[in-house]
Amino acid sequence: MRRLLFILSSAALVFSSLPGASQEEPATQTAPTAYTTVSGHVLCGDTGQPARFAAVQLIPEKPQPSQTPDFTNVKDSKGMANLIARSMSQTLKGTGLSAVSAMDGSFEMAKVPAGTYYVVAQLSGYLSPLSALSTGDRMTGGGDAISRIKALAEKIVVQDAPVRVDVRLERGGSINGVVRYDDGSPAAGVDAVRMVLQEDGKWMVDNFNPLVSPAKTDDRGHYRISGLAKGKYAVKAELPTNQMISGLGPGSFNMHSNFGDALVVYSGGVFREKEIKPIEVGLGEDVEGINIVFPIDNLHVVSGTVVAKADSHPINAGSISLTDPETKASLRHTKIEEDGSFQFNYVPEGQYALSTGRVGDTDKSATPDAYAQMMNPKFLKSYKDLTMPIDVKGDLTGLTLQMVDQPAGASAKPPTP
Image (cartoon, rainbow, N blue to C red):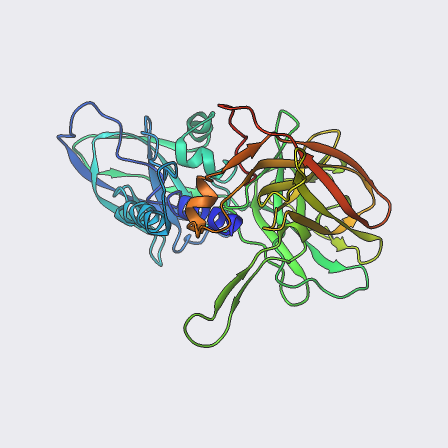
C-alpha cells in the first residue's frame, strides 16, 4: 500500500508537468499591463508536413517554481484526497501559455501577458528541449533546466503587438527490441524504461516522463522507445509482479503490489547498474535488437524476520531493501509484514546487503489510516537502521535481523520510494 500511494502521488505530480501546466504565471513584480496573441505553425523536419496535434508551450524566462503537494500534514485518506484534488485543480486551470496545433499545424494563444518566453513544441517521436529533463527538474525548474531550454528553444519577446513564431521539430532516435523469458516466451505488458547516461557518469532514470513515448511491451514482447536525442542510453525492465486488476462490478478494482519480487534486468543481460554497457544512439537513428531476457532458473528466495534485539519480539512496520554492498544502490525493496516477516523472490546468485528503513512498532490494536501511516508513520518505538551482508548461492530462509532501539530524539531515514 505504501508503494501504491507513491504511485498515485507521483502521477499527480506528473500531471502537473504536462504541457500547459508545468509552469506558473511569469514571475513579475506587478500584474502585466499588456496582453497579445502568439500564433504560428509547427512543422515536422523529416517529412516537411505539419506537426498535427503537437503541444506548444511558452516557458517564461524567469518562471516561478511550481507548487508541489506537501504530504507532511496528511492525517488520513480524506486529507490525501483533498491534497490530490487541489493539485489536479491547479493542473486543469493551467496558465494560458499553451496550445495544441491543428490539422494544418497551426496554433494560437489568445491572451499572452507581456514578457520574455521560450517556445517549446512536443510531439511523440520528435525531439523537445524538455525531453531530456527529469520530471522533478521540469516541475521545479531545478538544476540547469532553464539554461538547457535556452540553448535549444527559440526566444520571443511579447509586448503589445501580436507575435508570430514557427517551430520545426526534428525526429529523434529510437531503441527497439524484445523483452522475453529465457524459455523463449514473450514478456507482455512490461515497461521498458529508458536510462540516460549523464555527463557525470551517472544514470538518470525517469519513470514518469510524459515527453518520451511509453514503451510497454505488446503481446509479442516488442517495445520501442522513441524521441531520443543523440546520446548514450540503456533500457531496464522488471518482472511484471505489480498489477492493476479490474473485474466486474463495483469494488472489483485491485492493486497487487509486491516490489520484493520485481527482479530488474538491464540491456546486456546484467542485473546491476554498474555492469551496464551504454547504447549509443545518433540523431534520428533507429537502434534495433536491444533485447532483455528474464532468467527462469537459478533464482532464489531470501526471507526472514525482523525482531527487537532487546526481547526478540517481531517488529511489525517498516521497509527492507536488497542493496548492492559496493555501490549501496537499492536493487528492490519490500515491506515488513505485521508478523515481522519479509521475503524477496527471484533473487539471482551474488552478494547483497539487506538494509532496513524507518522500522518501528505500531499499535496492532489500533486501526490507523493506511495513507497517514504510510506518509507520516506513528511508532510506539523506533529502531536504528541496520545492514546485513548476505551471499546468495541458493535459497536463504530463516534470516533474523535484530534491531537496536533508536535513541530518543533521533529520526529515522525516509522510507524507500
